[in-house]
Image (tube, rainbow, N blue to C red; front, side):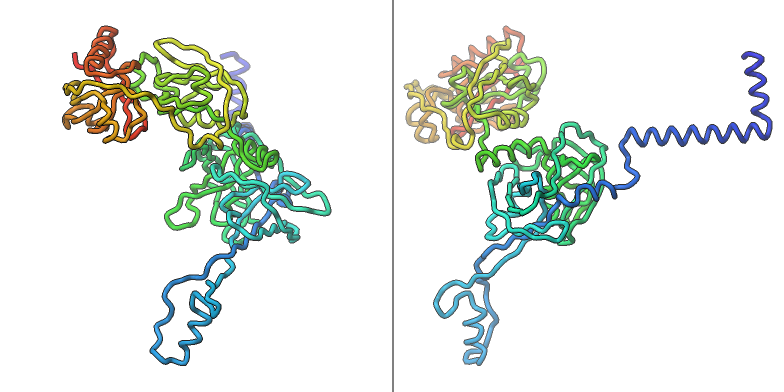
Length: 491
């Protein structure tokens, strides 16, 4: 230590300088905490943000005509003077024999996305509504009409006609939100209009029940009536549409879900342009890649979407085959089946994309022109010609097997299958039983090659062992539905 440093240290131990030193340390600590708070985006108040976005947030009231209750009426003694009264006015039918009707009202929230009156809300808020009334923060009310809905993401687009431009809020990029970021919700909870609540992003990429789910989870208070309302980031941008809560009692317990804005904007764009959704369709049946399946086919990591079936459609025309693992779609890495469904659905109908597949130990890139999902919901695999097989049973891998015959096709109602091995019994102590194989299942492939007899299956087992594989991948069909199962090979 230098003499100057020793001198400063000595002086710091004196009374006045010790107080100054403590003051400087305190100021440094405060400054560090302030910088840390700014780095986290911690707001001093949400008041300015609430003032900024309030004019664009709306309350929604819907009216629906429903049939009156047909439950049992009051029990009256025969001949009672009230008997005719309750029959005519309280019963399910009037004098003209027509079922009486009543009006049912529901409340929800929404937000304006353009000055010419487009409004976003949840589909379940306005579903089956006869009348939709929009109440603005100013107290003004307007009637709305439905432009389009998407039950798959529970999003609806409404339109109002206004004599003057309306205040609106922009969408933000939900992919930029991180767990721990501050968010603010606004809406009409329990009929208490234009209420604000705040919290943080608790989790990302949550899936509930829908095919295209991509929810932001938040602890900001969301209750009944908040449905369809916006979830804002600290810049006043909508990064989610409040849709659902997890609650044992119907009230907020701090687990709410908002559909991510990057899903919503894609849906809204299609509803504005077409009045309906037009999602891309690849035309494959898929399942997740498990570690044992990855080992069985020589894939280094258990990722991607394993193709179990390729009916007639875009994928078949593009050269995708059952047993392929789709690892990349249009430049996006595919982590699992949910990721593939999402990116395909967000792709344009008629768009030609590059699909990278893992097949026979190596990758290859295919070009596929996408179809439209909504017009292909009932697509089924093309029928294959039936083959005659000799009926011979054999036990292998804990399974009792026999070739698929015309008689068995009829019994199992799998007439479209060309060839395969029928499982007639499963050893309950075997791995095959643990992994769900049952009598009546049909094995159509082993080691990603077709099998028509037990000898074919035995050959696939030997080939896998010679290649150093610890398991063999089987393609199983049950009532026509395919799935892959990897079974361990005994030494």
